[in-house]
Length: 351
Image (tube, rainbow, N blue to C red; front, side, top):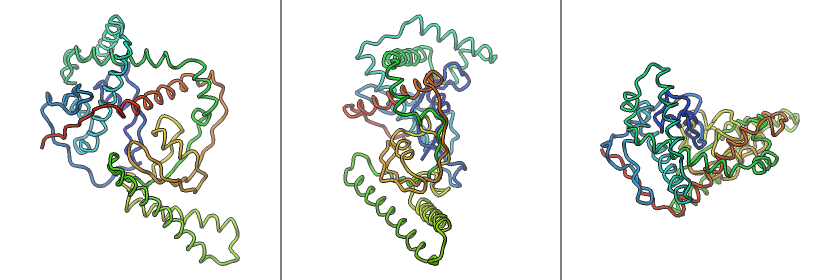
Protein backbone atom coordinates (compact mmCIF):
# COMPACT_ATOMS: atom_id res chain seq x y z
CA UNK A 1 0.00 0.00 0.00
CA UNK A 2 1.04 3.60 -0.37
CA UNK A 3 3.65 5.10 1.84
CA UNK A 4 3.71 8.82 2.21
CA UNK A 5 6.49 9.26 4.71
CA UNK A 6 5.35 10.90 7.92
CA UNK A 7 7.42 14.13 7.64
CA UNK A 8 6.68 14.37 3.91
CA UNK A 9 2.93 14.14 4.37
CA UNK A 10 3.02 16.59 7.24
CA UNK A 11 4.91 19.21 5.29
CA UNK A 12 2.90 18.40 2.18
CA UNK A 13 -0.36 19.22 3.93
CA UNK A 14 0.86 22.27 5.78
CA UNK A 15 2.98 23.57 2.92
CA UNK A 16 5.90 24.11 5.29
CA UNK A 17 8.47 21.84 3.66
CA UNK A 18 11.28 24.40 3.97
CA UNK A 19 10.54 25.18 7.61
CA UNK A 20 11.56 22.25 9.84
CA UNK A 21 10.55 23.95 13.08
CA UNK A 22 6.90 23.64 12.13
CA UNK A 23 6.91 19.98 11.06
CA UNK A 24 3.70 18.31 12.23
CA UNK A 25 2.78 14.76 13.16
CA UNK A 26 0.67 12.78 10.76
CA UNK A 27 -1.10 9.44 10.89
CA UNK A 28 0.90 6.40 9.89
CA UNK A 29 0.31 5.06 6.40
CA UNK A 30 1.27 1.93 4.58
CA UNK A 31 4.59 2.04 2.78
CA UNK A 32 5.44 2.71 -0.81
CA UNK A 33 7.31 -0.05 -2.66
CA UNK A 34 11.09 0.02 -2.65
CA UNK A 35 11.09 0.68 -6.38
CA UNK A 36 8.59 2.88 -8.17
CA UNK A 37 6.04 1.11 -10.39
CA UNK A 38 6.71 1.24 -14.09
CA UNK A 39 3.28 2.69 -14.87
CA UNK A 40 2.45 6.09 -13.45
CA UNK A 41 -1.01 7.46 -12.73
CA UNK A 42 -2.16 10.44 -14.77
CA UNK A 43 -2.22 13.77 -13.00
CA UNK A 44 -5.51 14.63 -11.32
CA UNK A 45 -7.40 17.49 -12.96
CA UNK A 46 -7.06 20.76 -11.06
CA UNK A 47 -10.06 22.61 -9.68
CA UNK A 48 -10.47 26.32 -8.98
CA UNK A 49 -8.59 27.19 -5.76
CA UNK A 50 -11.73 28.73 -4.15
CA UNK A 51 -13.70 25.55 -4.85
CA UNK A 52 -14.77 23.25 -2.05
CA UNK A 53 -12.94 19.90 -2.10
CA UNK A 54 -15.05 18.43 0.72
CA UNK A 55 -17.43 19.41 3.50
CA UNK A 56 -17.15 18.09 7.06
CA UNK A 57 -20.33 18.63 9.09
CA UNK A 58 -21.02 21.62 6.86
CA UNK A 59 -17.51 23.07 7.19
CA UNK A 60 -15.75 23.45 3.82
CA UNK A 61 -12.34 22.01 3.06
CA UNK A 62 -11.07 24.33 0.36
CA UNK A 63 -9.47 23.21 -2.88
CA UNK A 64 -6.65 25.67 -2.18
CA UNK A 65 -5.57 23.49 0.76
CA UNK A 66 -5.52 20.41 -1.49
CA UNK A 67 -3.55 22.27 -4.16
CA UNK A 68 -1.09 23.40 -1.50
CA UNK A 69 -0.45 19.75 -0.75
CA UNK A 70 -0.25 18.72 -4.40
CA UNK A 71 2.47 21.30 -5.05
CA UNK A 72 4.86 19.00 -3.17
CA UNK A 73 3.94 15.99 -5.32
CA UNK A 74 5.21 15.18 -8.83
CA UNK A 75 2.35 15.75 -11.32
CA UNK A 76 2.33 12.07 -12.29
CA UNK A 77 1.40 11.19 -8.70
CA UNK A 78 -1.37 13.76 -8.24
CA UNK A 79 -4.20 11.28 -8.83
CA UNK A 80 -2.66 8.90 -6.30
CA UNK A 81 -1.86 11.55 -3.67
CA UNK A 82 -5.04 13.63 -3.87
CA UNK A 83 -7.35 11.23 -1.93
CA UNK A 84 -4.78 10.95 0.86
CA UNK A 85 -4.44 14.72 1.09
CA UNK A 86 -8.21 15.24 1.13
CA UNK A 87 -8.59 12.50 3.74
CA UNK A 88 -5.95 14.08 5.97
CA UNK A 89 -7.61 17.50 5.71
CA UNK A 90 -10.96 15.92 6.60
CA UNK A 91 -9.38 14.30 9.66
CA UNK A 92 -7.91 17.65 10.72
CA UNK A 93 -11.33 19.30 10.41
CA UNK A 94 -13.01 16.54 12.44
CA UNK A 95 -10.45 16.81 15.22
CA UNK A 96 -10.55 20.60 15.36
CA UNK A 97 -14.34 20.62 15.48
CA UNK A 98 -14.20 18.18 18.38
CA UNK A 99 -11.60 20.20 20.28
CA UNK A 100 -13.58 23.42 19.79
CA UNK A 101 -16.65 21.65 21.20
CA UNK A 102 -14.53 20.80 24.26
CA UNK A 103 -13.70 24.52 24.51
CA UNK A 104 -9.96 23.88 24.24
CA UNK A 105 -8.47 27.25 23.42
CA UNK A 106 -5.23 28.21 21.68
CA UNK A 107 -3.39 31.05 23.41
CA UNK A 108 -2.99 33.99 21.00
CA UNK A 109 0.47 34.64 22.46
CA UNK A 110 1.51 31.09 21.59
CA UNK A 111 0.25 31.59 18.03
CA UNK A 112 2.29 34.82 17.81
CA UNK A 113 5.34 32.97 19.14
CA UNK A 114 5.02 30.28 16.47
CA UNK A 115 4.67 32.93 13.76
CA UNK A 116 7.84 34.63 15.00
CA UNK A 117 9.66 31.28 15.03
CA UNK A 118 8.54 30.69 11.46
CA UNK A 119 9.69 34.14 10.36
CA UNK A 120 13.09 33.57 12.01
CA UNK A 121 13.44 30.21 10.29
CA UNK A 122 12.54 31.76 6.93
CA UNK A 123 15.03 34.57 7.46
CA UNK A 124 17.72 31.99 8.26
CA UNK A 125 17.03 30.41 4.90
CA UNK A 126 17.37 33.88 3.28
CA UNK A 127 13.78 33.81 2.11
CA UNK A 128 10.97 36.39 2.25
CA UNK A 129 8.05 35.67 4.60
CA UNK A 130 5.38 37.22 2.35
CA UNK A 131 6.70 35.37 -0.70
CA UNK A 132 6.75 32.06 1.20
CA UNK A 133 3.10 32.50 2.14
CA UNK A 134 2.22 33.43 -1.44
CA UNK A 135 4.07 30.41 -2.81
CA UNK A 136 2.17 28.21 -0.36
CA UNK A 137 -1.14 29.83 -1.42
CA UNK A 138 -1.64 30.70 2.24
CA UNK A 139 -2.75 33.91 3.93
CA UNK A 140 -1.41 34.83 7.35
CA UNK A 141 -4.94 34.42 8.71
CA UNK A 142 -5.06 30.84 7.41
CA UNK A 143 -1.60 30.20 8.80
CA UNK A 144 -2.75 31.40 12.22
CA UNK A 145 -5.75 29.06 12.02
CA UNK A 146 -3.45 26.10 11.21
CA UNK A 147 -1.18 26.96 14.12
CA UNK A 148 -4.11 27.44 16.51
CA UNK A 149 -5.46 24.01 15.48
CA UNK A 150 -2.08 22.42 16.16
CA UNK A 151 -1.87 24.12 19.56
CA UNK A 152 -5.35 22.91 20.49
CA UNK A 153 -4.38 19.36 19.57
CA UNK A 154 -1.09 19.57 21.48
CA UNK A 155 -2.92 20.88 24.55
CA UNK A 156 -5.51 18.08 24.39
CA UNK A 157 -2.95 15.34 23.73
CA UNK A 158 -0.77 16.55 26.62
CA UNK A 159 -3.74 16.33 28.96
CA UNK A 160 -4.39 12.73 27.92
CA UNK A 161 -0.77 11.50 27.86
CA UNK A 162 -0.32 11.09 31.60
CA UNK A 163 2.70 9.31 33.01
CA UNK A 164 0.55 6.32 34.02
CA UNK A 165 -1.03 6.03 30.56
CA UNK A 166 2.39 6.13 28.88
CA UNK A 167 3.90 3.57 31.27
CA UNK A 168 0.96 1.24 30.70
CA UNK A 169 1.41 1.51 26.94
CA UNK A 170 5.15 0.87 27.23
CA UNK A 171 4.73 -2.18 29.49
CA UNK A 172 1.96 -3.73 27.39
CA UNK A 173 3.60 -3.10 23.98
CA UNK A 174 7.37 -3.30 24.40
CA UNK A 175 7.83 -4.50 20.83
CA UNK A 176 6.76 -1.00 19.74
CA UNK A 177 9.81 0.53 21.37
CA UNK A 178 12.58 -2.07 21.37
CA UNK A 179 13.56 -1.80 17.69
CA UNK A 180 11.85 -5.03 16.58
CA UNK A 181 11.19 -5.12 12.84
CA UNK A 182 9.36 -7.38 10.41
CA UNK A 183 9.16 -7.82 6.66
CA UNK A 184 5.97 -8.97 4.96
CA UNK A 185 4.28 -9.38 1.63
CA UNK A 186 0.63 -8.41 1.35
CA UNK A 187 -2.28 -8.47 -1.06
CA UNK A 188 -4.68 -5.52 -0.91
CA UNK A 189 -8.27 -5.42 -2.16
CA UNK A 190 -10.16 -2.13 -2.03
CA UNK A 191 -13.94 -2.67 -2.01
CA UNK A 192 -16.23 0.26 -1.26
CA UNK A 193 -16.17 0.33 2.56
CA UNK A 194 -19.83 1.37 2.71
CA UNK A 195 -20.93 -1.59 0.57
CA UNK A 196 -21.27 -4.53 2.97
CA UNK A 197 -21.72 -7.08 0.17
CA UNK A 198 -18.61 -5.82 -1.66
CA UNK A 199 -16.55 -6.01 1.53
CA UNK A 200 -17.71 -9.56 2.26
CA UNK A 201 -17.02 -10.58 -1.35
CA UNK A 202 -13.48 -9.20 -1.08
CA UNK A 203 -12.98 -11.01 2.23
CA UNK A 204 -14.12 -14.28 0.63
CA UNK A 205 -11.80 -13.65 -2.32
CA UNK A 206 -8.79 -13.21 -0.01
CA UNK A 207 -9.67 -16.35 1.96
CA UNK A 208 -9.89 -18.25 -1.33
CA UNK A 209 -6.43 -16.92 -2.25
CA UNK A 210 -5.09 -18.10 1.10
CA UNK A 211 -6.45 -21.59 0.47
CA UNK A 212 -5.05 -21.57 -3.07
CA UNK A 213 -1.57 -20.69 -1.74
CA UNK A 214 -1.77 -23.39 0.94
CA UNK A 215 -2.97 -25.99 -1.58
CA UNK A 216 -0.20 -25.11 -4.06
CA UNK A 217 2.37 -25.31 -1.28
CA UNK A 218 1.07 -28.69 -0.12
CA UNK A 219 1.09 -29.99 -3.71
CA UNK A 220 4.68 -28.85 -4.17
CA UNK A 221 5.80 -30.49 -0.94
CA UNK A 222 4.09 -33.73 -1.93
CA UNK A 223 6.43 -33.98 -4.92
CA UNK A 224 9.55 -34.05 -2.73
CA UNK A 225 11.20 -37.43 -2.16
CA UNK A 226 10.21 -39.14 1.07
CA UNK A 227 13.86 -39.05 2.12
CA UNK A 228 14.05 -35.24 2.03
CA UNK A 229 15.58 -33.93 5.27
CA UNK A 230 13.37 -31.86 7.58
CA UNK A 231 15.41 -28.67 7.11
CA UNK A 232 15.38 -29.03 3.33
CA UNK A 233 11.63 -29.67 3.40
CA UNK A 234 11.06 -26.54 5.49
CA UNK A 235 13.19 -24.43 3.13
CA UNK A 236 11.18 -25.80 0.20
CA UNK A 237 7.94 -24.87 2.01
CA UNK A 238 9.18 -21.32 2.49
CA UNK A 239 10.01 -20.95 -1.20
CA UNK A 240 6.75 -22.50 -2.39
CA UNK A 241 4.54 -20.37 -0.16
CA UNK A 242 6.44 -17.17 -0.97
CA UNK A 243 6.46 -17.78 -4.72
CA UNK A 244 2.74 -18.58 -4.74
CA UNK A 245 1.88 -15.54 -2.60
CA UNK A 246 4.05 -13.19 -4.70
CA UNK A 247 2.44 -14.40 -7.94
CA UNK A 248 -1.06 -13.70 -6.61
CA UNK A 249 0.02 -10.31 -5.28
CA UNK A 250 1.33 -9.32 -8.72
CA UNK A 251 -1.92 -10.42 -10.32
CA UNK A 252 -4.56 -9.34 -7.78
CA UNK A 253 -3.25 -6.68 -5.37
CA UNK A 254 -4.45 -3.08 -5.61
CA UNK A 255 -1.28 -1.82 -3.92
CA UNK A 256 1.71 -0.45 -5.88
CA UNK A 257 3.80 -3.02 -3.97
CA UNK A 258 2.33 -5.59 -6.39
CA UNK A 259 5.32 -4.77 -8.60
CA UNK A 260 7.46 -6.41 -5.91
CA UNK A 261 5.08 -9.31 -5.38
CA UNK A 262 3.49 -7.49 -2.44
CA UNK A 263 6.77 -7.00 -0.57
CA UNK A 264 6.51 -3.84 1.55
CA UNK A 265 9.99 -4.14 3.05
CA UNK A 266 11.06 -3.85 6.68
CA UNK A 267 8.99 -1.84 9.17
CA UNK A 268 8.79 -1.40 12.92
CA UNK A 269 5.84 -1.91 15.24
CA UNK A 270 4.76 1.73 15.43
CA UNK A 271 5.04 4.83 13.32
CA UNK A 272 5.22 3.34 9.82
CA UNK A 273 2.05 1.31 9.34
CA UNK A 274 -1.51 1.89 10.43
CA UNK A 275 -2.14 0.07 13.70
CA UNK A 276 -4.36 -2.84 12.52
CA UNK A 277 -1.81 -3.76 9.84
CA UNK A 278 1.20 -3.53 12.16
CA UNK A 279 -0.53 -5.39 15.00
CA UNK A 280 -1.54 -8.27 12.76
CA UNK A 281 1.89 -8.47 11.13
CA UNK A 282 3.78 -8.65 14.42
CA UNK A 283 1.48 -11.44 15.65
CA UNK A 284 2.50 -13.73 12.77
CA UNK A 285 5.24 -16.36 12.78
CA UNK A 286 7.71 -16.50 9.90
CA UNK A 287 6.09 -17.84 6.72
CA UNK A 288 2.63 -17.77 8.28
CA UNK A 289 -0.28 -16.27 6.34
CA UNK A 290 -2.62 -13.96 8.21
CA UNK A 291 -6.38 -13.98 8.37
CA UNK A 292 -8.04 -11.11 6.49
CA UNK A 293 -7.06 -7.76 8.06
CA UNK A 294 -9.15 -4.64 7.53
CA UNK A 295 -7.64 -1.14 7.59
CA UNK A 296 -8.65 2.28 6.28
CA UNK A 297 -7.02 1.28 2.97
CA UNK A 298 -9.05 -1.89 2.41
CA UNK A 299 -8.68 -5.61 3.11
CA UNK A 300 -5.29 -7.30 3.36
CA UNK A 301 -3.80 -10.77 3.33
CA UNK A 302 -0.25 -10.90 4.73
CA UNK A 303 2.64 -13.32 4.57
CA UNK A 304 5.31 -12.94 7.25
CA UNK A 305 8.79 -13.28 5.73
CA UNK A 306 11.33 -12.33 8.41
CA UNK A 307 11.60 -10.92 11.92
CA UNK A 308 14.39 -8.96 13.60
CA UNK A 309 14.27 -8.94 17.39
CA UNK A 310 14.85 -5.73 19.32
CA UNK A 311 16.60 -5.11 22.62
CA UNK A 312 15.51 -4.20 26.14
CA UNK A 313 14.97 -0.54 27.08
CA UNK A 314 13.77 1.26 30.20
CA UNK A 315 10.67 3.45 30.06
CA UNK A 316 12.68 6.60 30.82
CA UNK A 317 14.87 5.98 27.76
CA UNK A 318 11.85 5.76 25.46
CA UNK A 319 9.35 8.14 27.06
CA UNK A 320 9.31 10.64 24.18
CA UNK A 321 8.83 7.86 21.64
CA UNK A 322 6.07 6.29 23.76
CA UNK A 323 4.32 9.64 23.91
CA UNK A 324 4.50 10.07 20.15
CA UNK A 325 3.02 6.62 19.57
CA UNK A 326 0.30 7.25 22.14
CA UNK A 327 -0.66 10.56 20.52
CA UNK A 328 -0.74 8.97 17.06
CA UNK A 329 -3.03 6.22 18.36
CA UNK A 330 -5.18 8.75 20.20
CA UNK A 331 -5.59 10.73 16.98
CA UNK A 332 -6.45 7.63 14.95
CA UNK A 333 -8.96 6.45 17.56
CA UNK A 334 -10.67 9.84 17.78
CA UNK A 335 -10.89 10.20 14.00
CA UNK A 336 -12.46 6.74 13.72
CA UNK A 337 -15.10 7.62 16.32
CA UNK A 338 -15.80 11.06 14.87
CA UNK A 339 -16.19 9.74 11.32
CA UNK A 340 -18.98 7.41 12.42
CA UNK A 341 -21.31 10.29 13.22
CA UNK A 342 -19.95 12.92 10.84
CA UNK A 343 -21.53 14.17 7.63
CA UNK A 344 -18.73 14.16 5.07
CA UNK A 345 -19.10 14.92 1.38
CA UNK A 346 -16.16 14.82 -1.04
CA UNK A 347 -16.38 16.83 -4.26
CA UNK A 348 -14.73 15.06 -7.22
CA UNK A 349 -12.14 17.27 -8.97
CA UNK A 350 -13.44 18.97 -12.09
CA UNK A 351 -12.35 17.58 -15.43
